[in-house]
Image (cartoon, rainbow, N blue to C red; front, side, top):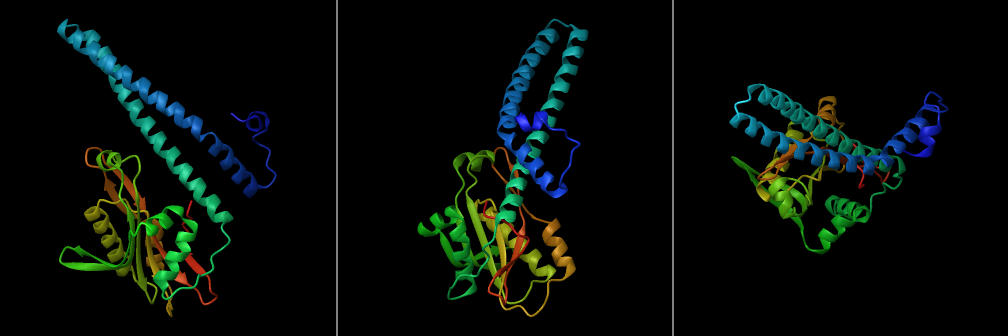
Length: 277
């Protein structure tokens, strides 16, 4: 644990907002060590459960009922400990991403709209300047314009689709390199709730049909005369796109629909703001 955390009085507060950021930063520096501890704990509990299972079989053959019950109780406690450890690991992952996102948003200053022939070209220029992976994907000609997918009884056309296929490990077990996917739909008015839900369903269908994990899903608004209604705003923040990925062991991945509007002041307006980090 860092020296300043050990020796400071946790009750002493100077500026609540600044101290909250500092506290978050202090916890963030401990994440690599915590990940190692969780990995070691996984190995310990896993090997212990295998040993207990072996002893349970031996006691069963020896017809030692009392021994079997004690070992079975220990085995159940071990399983519950693994489940709690998995929850802790998920929280640490969430905290790490959340902290990086908040810090990136806090430091982000440049939101000027670049030059381009149309809204789609302008947004891809803006994003690729900040995202080296997307820039590489474009250089490899993995950027599609006007890409159409089938959605049950009909079809849905994305103005932009950029993607990088996941690794074999990710395809089988859901972890590892999950690749990249960017879905963009251009609209000339702020979307209704039904349009957002339709876009959500199309992205989900596109990810499943192409074997992708959703990274960014953008509704790009250009020249809007209306305003975003409250129900749509609430849905965007509370109902992200959910895709399960992995054939043998699946993982659940979330991706918020993001509305990016071209403002009359020559800057982008983001709902919500999702940084490149």
